[in-house]
Length: 421
Image (cartoon, rainbow, N blue to C red; front, side, top):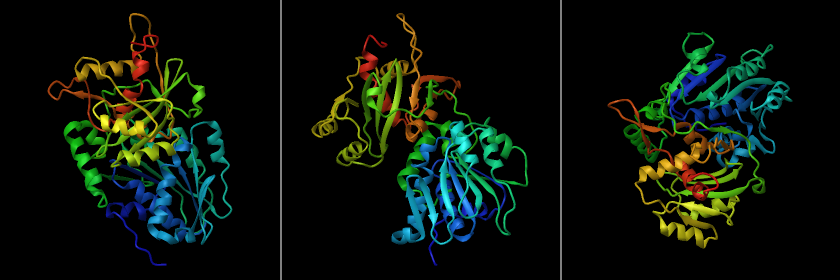
């Protein structure tokens, strides 16, 4: 079989390594996940008796990340003949090489049940030889030790065990840095890549990263240059990832929030409110889509048309188009105050600020499949005064589309006296 393999030269050393641990830190858009998925497809076709477990901390997020990357690699390499070489299963998620029976399965480590499930993995042919930890900083050191213990026993000649970790190096205090980067180990290969190493990056993404360099220098060090860092000045701390009920009747109230976009993302969030806590149930997050293209996507997500959709008031024509499509789209009516104070009032509500009437200790729960919202929550922060080093009461205006949708979506609840002014 002769195939053309599109690749970035910066990953050659990684793909040739037989070391047990591969720690790949890098910027957003560096191509590390795309290359990893492609390398696994080729390795599993070549090496009989090898099998892969692709993992995210939350099992459900595999569908839109590791599974999407691996199936994308299959179709990219083989085009219309993809399913001649690979059998792709959707329930459960699974890939099987038709040539030799090697498999890819998908797992999480969110709870004890998932950990036990990992311990009992067996394959019809061969052994578990490879583990891919996507967004590896989500995992604890104990998680990885459990995974590492599964890779044991004699292997045929030329086979080897390997754990590959791909991640953005958000926190310089993370255990991955201490264990794999700070002390030389002959069993470890560390690798660093950025979007500048990715010869397939599109011009629009490159421009977005260059803009981040100007508006968010600290974030650019991490998400642009892939350097270890620590994002200080985070706006929201009162949130966590949790698998949420998608049954709307389980919540006291439901609303939608939308931040219009084209070159930056158009973000729509489905929100629930229950006992003063906020639940982010679903997201639509699309670049370079016209409203006519977004409406069918929203309908496919099953976003309710009988609930209020709060939108940026600066786009009346787009609001009108959504209303014609049957959605209860309406503009956010901003208070007669400066924009910064208006945003601050919204953020205060999200944080659960204490008022003279009562204290609301609000939590925000995010379903794990809302990956873009989670990414924005992790990096949404206050601007820093470069002269004094102090944080200002003004958010960094970069990659905050889901956060804008979140602010808009809570509009009626925020203004309702019975909840919190």
